[in-house]
Image (cartoon, rainbow, N blue to C red; front, side, top):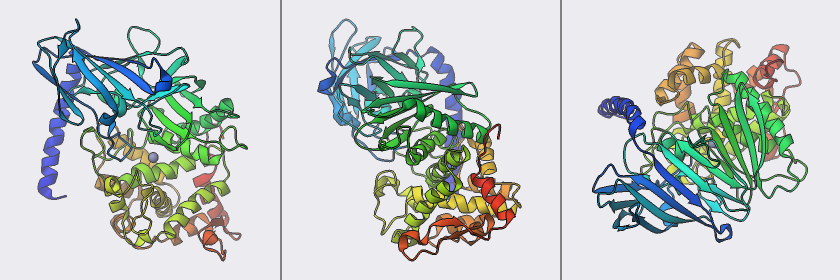
Length: 522
Ligand SMILES: [Zn+2]
């Protein structure tokens, strides 16, 4: 970025800060948009939405539906699922609706203080960003569900669910509405609403509390032999490891919305995650793969939902942002998601090394590592594939795979430079302290934070790891942790990490410092 552009950006940000203060005051007096969602015939996959939209007596109001979902780097056509959209006054007089863009609607209010917007949603999506309505449950994701005012204001949004008889309850991280009625929720602003998926239907709920924060594991779908209580106990373990790591839990309530259905993937949210899971017959409480997957999404509540690259928020739901820092937001989330499973005692150090080895094997087997840099992989996410998955390994490198490896190598470097006194853990905690929330970090600020902890300049190291296609150098990490690559003849075992049989006591201690159990009381 040029100096001019950076100046302009800074000016924009101070303006954003001013607007935020103004918007806070504004939220106190802005009337809410109130949505009523029903699914009278769930088998039809149709949801019916009515929204009461305040007009502030304007002659026309402009409404908007997002074209992407934060955290999921793909432009999607949510507006394409909207059917039979119409608007009327509260006493039923029809109003004129124009559609200047595919995802925008303009309503001539006729001077009414509130207009009632009605639309139907075709809910046949099984991804973590789309809506589903079916016999057993319904999933409502923010971007796919809520048409809102195109405005720059912190306006409250309320949701009232009218559930069909076969859906006994709903779960979401949203706060209860002031009316205290079941299945009525309220968000202070659209960002919160957008970031809080809602699951309704036949739900199996298990809860536990860590540091005063209640966590819910909510299972739905084809449960079969799934043991939700057992799974919740394992999830609680790595939640406690996160508490031990960060020293706090930044929410009072967190919800794991765990669906057993076709498809796959998970998406992080501010105080929840939406997961599409599978389980193998032998692991009714979740196998290590599932635990690593869920642990990744949970670590995201800290890393990306709160500690985030400056580009990733506040969001423009019609213009997707680009950043070079997905190696931090996704790569380090994978690194720590897996470490939290190890540090909570749910897996052995050898299990952990197997996960790390699979990342190394994947990168070292991909010719794209010599073509695309990690920075570029992050910048290209909107054009190169879906969220870094399914890209062409000949020309691209995945930040999900190379990111955690760079995390591991950087961690080893900091530990060696500080003789084991500091680590990447300290970088994450310091970065969180400085840049979480509305602030966000630039790539340079993240590097400077790492340099401060390491006590030395890391510019060349970062350049090689992030901005070049040079091969990664594993020697330092292998030496620090007393590891080696197994001397297998086949390609699959070539990059398999194992403890050296002749590792010194210091090396063994270094490895335990990384993957040993780190839990309160241990
Ligand atoms: Zn992720």
